[in-house]
Length: 315
Image (tube, rainbow, N blue to C red; front, side):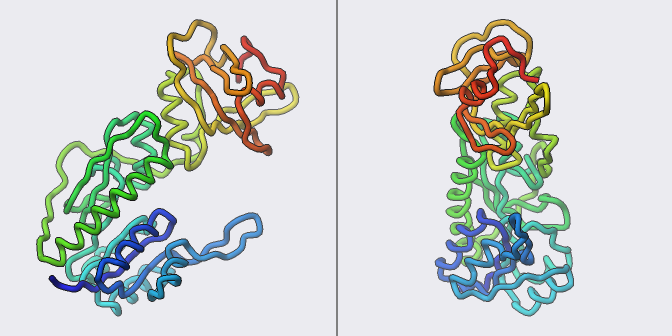
């Protein structure tokens, strides 16, 4: 079995488990590439990416190219057999893709061609999917359009939110990547064109986070789940003296039928727990909220602090 020279490209936390798995797989990780350091936090302190920090811990050569020509130069100098990409965050030019002997293998958190783009896990939850998965595919000049190497399905549980689903997909994806690299080292490489109906999963914006209580409760529940890693689902509460943005951190669908009242009306309150709000169809149990400028709290405590009660309208 051939020992591969591998370049790894990734930036955020979710990519770290993949780098750790590659580093222990018996091949030579000749370089780790992540995006340049960026200012973070209120103090705008310059910090390196999680992948760059892990590369230092693993004593691997780390690079942070700031431009496409610099990225090309770095990879040209490393002369890899294989490049592995996990949430790198930048499109890689076609000329650069030709620099790895076997190609650039990307880990994508959906069953391609469904949910191409930046937020596949979030959109799978927002759309109420029952099944998703991980795809290893070969990068080409398009956006997640390259030929498929391997796939693995993963069920979407009723209890899942973006954090839990990301966690399971990451574990499944790391296993799949390790298996895929073994196959590549053994010369067992396939490149199958993507087949089936395609869909997009664009980056989420603050506008995607708004909870409109005139919509069905199931759609709002899925929005809370899908946005658990940000931007959080929220509604705007209009008070006599101000408007407050309220993030919904946890929600559920209450058992049994939900009665009448206008959309946005508080139907019931669970002492020490949450409250049920009427939606276009059904009701949403709002369990935990975070009002603007305050700490997270139970839904009932939030209503009590504002002297809101069943029958009042959240608007």
